[in-house]
Length: 197
Ligand code: HEC
Image 1 (spheres, rainbow, N blue to C red):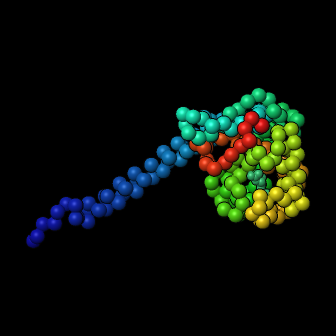
Image 2 (spheres, rainbow, N blue to C red):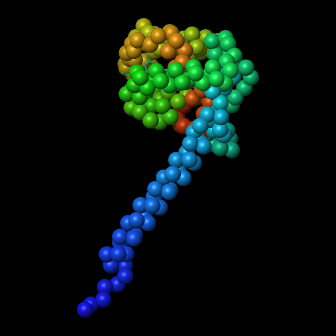
Image 3 (cartoon, rainbow, N blue to C red):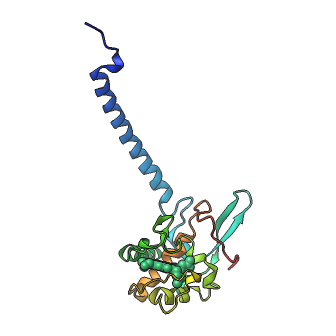
């Protein structure tokens, strides 16, 4: 009888299937932990939630060839310094509202979502909101009544009124401020700030 080479045998491919499945499973577990350690608040690239108490700037870094978030002195959101726990609660309210109202249907956050409306990763730093002294107020007015306060930038696209309450708007603004402090390797690449605001 003709001898088949070992690599063509049934038992070899059975073992191979088991090893490849087990190896991929292990790799997925390792990657999950690796990702968690990089996306959790309070790690190297993702600041603590209480960063919303600070001034967040975005400056071009010559050596890296892209802009980097720069955390400055105290700049409490809505005039109140929050504890880490209070800040987390407010940012979480914002995150849940953003999920509940499905903002990703039109916007991208950290690059995920739809391309109808601007990416929100650095929306807090958008110079169109003016200086930080008026920014939270203008953002709140826009979020609670986007039709009445539409800006459209000549695109003709309008954000609909999503029935956002004042508390939810504050949560969203806290979330946007926190997200703008994340080091995203310069993403989104075409984002321009007025600088030093
Ligand atoms: C139906 C599509 C749509 C949905 C859903 C939507 N938006 Fe918008 N949004 C837009 C459009 C279009 C613009 C740009 C027009 C403008 O500024 O008036 C915009 C602008 C914005 C801006 C200003 C962006 C900047 O760079 O300054 C923010 C902040 C924003 N939206 C937040 C949200 C949040 C938070 C949600 C969910 C609660 C949401 N949007 C849901 C369409 C949408």
